[in-house]
Image 1 (cartoon, rainbow, N blue to C red):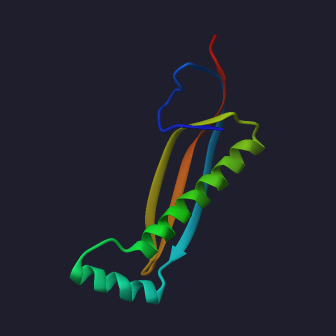
Image 2: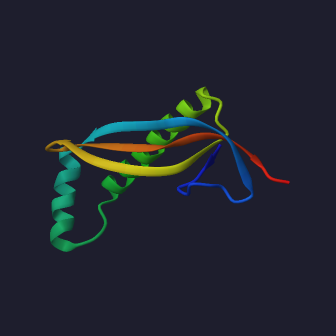
Image 3: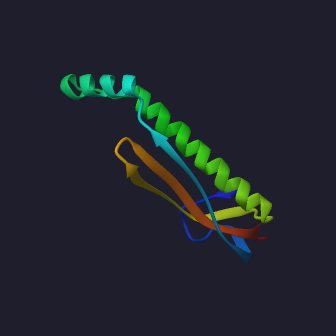
Length: 107
């Protein structure tokens, strides 16, 4: 599955637009991670626990979006965008969306 943030794929022709596909997850913070984040806020540095959680969340939402596109028979997803929003204090949604298309390599 080709994935791109652009509206077209160089060297490919879009044969059919299948429609919007998306994937989302809602994650909450962990008290132990919050304590480490507060310590890092004082001394500086990366909060590895949150970095790992966000990386896992991105992979999860991409997998969900790709699964939805595959169900529609897509060969690519174009115009991919990530959006985050706070659902409540300590809980955030990560959403990814794009346009599922049928594309083929140009000769």
